[in-house]
Length: 310
Length: 310
Image (cartoon, rainbow over all chains, first blue to last red; front, side, top):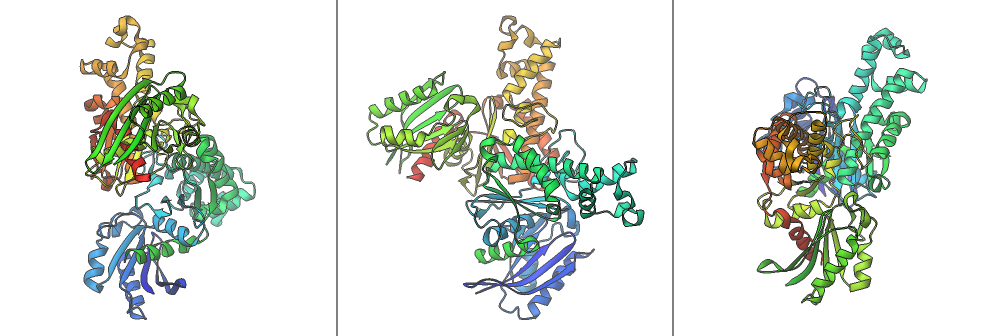
């Protein structure tokens, strides 16, 4: 039986769990959640100490699933646009010196992909790519049943030479067209430009507060602006899927995150566009399906990765 | 000592070799080359029978390095725009039934990447991407010292949503901007449109016969059209490099093929563009360097892959 302390560190929330893995599989002993806030490192330390203090004495290893680019060798978070305050944090050193714990780190989409592989929608596929469709677009790649420990920053492939500047430094990144943030900004700017939409009166007229779900609901009510914005974003996502299919030739694409709620508009548009663009010999074999573990994929994946590393 | 029959099957030439691998390394026993022509399968059979008839009795395995998308499981060439006549060929069945030989197949850029890994510029890197810069743009990916057996059709990532149609089905594919063919067509169409260039009088005025080397030579003589065309193509190649760096986070990018002759214009422009676009944390660590094995990379790689598979 291995006891692992796992953390899934995102821009909005930080989730932590004491997990045990043994012959009877994966068990969450205790689970905590806190808003990331303005001092994420303090939140992380608080969560770790809470879990260690209550029955965590047999824990020797921490697994971190983090939104960003990581250095798995030294357990450092190199870059994280959504949790900028944590950039450069040497978790390996911190956890070793303060708690004598060994640190394993992975990008959150990579960890989620491995979670789906061991316990979710990826169990029946040796080769698949998982996309996380949220504020940004992340991805994780499983080949021959193993997680590829690569950055997999597929959201930052440029699909438009002269496209808009992305905060990452590149221009025309595919997530600036296809992510939830992209959908929301596009809807807002079209309403500002005078387009008609039921979204105009949402949140008591403060339509700047709209989220992706509001747009999807409006689309279901037949709102043309909402439908068009979702379809255009889905089309851009399809270009990204086509690239991934031509590069990795996966058996499946697994989707997770808020936008999969809009499956019959956004995802269907993406599938149509990908089918038109990717190599027929490759796309014809690809199954596109939703994740099974949803929010628990990251914690599950990093728990297994950590248990395999020790 | 293992004896392998290797073939490197491209759109222009088919190269074949009887190779032996043992404790003293890799040795080419005999090497043949023939134009691909209009009946490539006949050429392949002729080359195989020539090598088998002369001292090839100890050969039990054939390794095929082919320009196209392959099914490694059954040794089938699924798609090959440059050798369309071979599309759908079941080499596994053919070689087994006719010669009782086992067949191992890989995409040619993948095989070349593995060749560089075992005996060339990739020996010192665990993680790298090889690009073949020719008529098209191919790629092969080595991670953790092993070849990723994926299509790696990186030349067919779209970098322009509304770009020109590519024969592959996609639009705006990055090879339609960055390959030797792209450079030649752009130079020709600019001359047709009346642009001034010393290339106009090349091949006794039949500038339609120009090749990438002609353009590079003109660029070295200060021809502005040639310089601009090479720089623009290099810039597009840089966008492709940036995508590859953001996806794979390699230690090195290894370049092979005719266009690397134009290193100080084309490749330098690519490096500048990639440095601007890729994640700083990733691109800053990437070494970009030429291949060491050149034309022998594919044969070398497929020989090692075949010897490891048996």
